[in-house]
Length: 255
Ligand code: SF4
Image 1 (tube, rainbow, N blue to C red):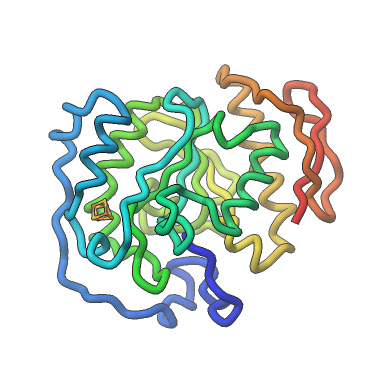
Image 2 (image 1 turned 90 degrees about the vertical axis):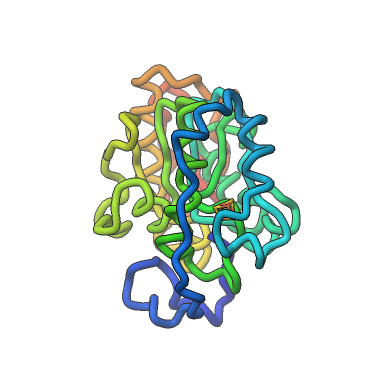
């Protein structure tokens, strides 16, 4: 999800009452990429070449480039966001704007560098005016994320925000109700927390996000996920320091 300006701060969570304020988009439905055909791509690099030439939905016409995702192709933690924003569209990398910098701090609070996880989005092309991707756009792009999931085979998926949660779990999922709960997608444990862009708009949610991250990390370690290379060292405002499940004294997440 792109960072949205303060003037658009009602646009917190897709599916909630602010949604009618989002820019309206052309509603001509688009077809999904056939998932079965993607099994031929045996590596993320092969799949990336294919996806970067995709014109499957209307989003490609309005963006600069496809943002495939990045990180450790064998990561035990897969982070899934909504879609590229302006900075991501410009640089071709996921989560590199202000929200991405907060995501880096969220990961660092657990001891991860971004190179130790894999970061992807539900849609690979930036929606115009940073609107929420439409259901048919998500359906068109989801096979790519599914193939990424199959190739990476993470032990845990962390959804950031409502769009990612609903794309994987279903349209009735609600981030405010279902964050911090364990769910399953493609037989992989899934947990959701607030999108970093939402945390930037409402810092009071950060302690809840930190709880979710700790819940995620505990299960991640129980499932044998590779331990982060660094001790958690970043400070979350208003949240007490915590001990990581692997015994490392973690810091807190800074705003
Ligand atoms: S958003 Fe996904 S399906 Fe749509 S054009 Fe981009 S890569 Fe293709």
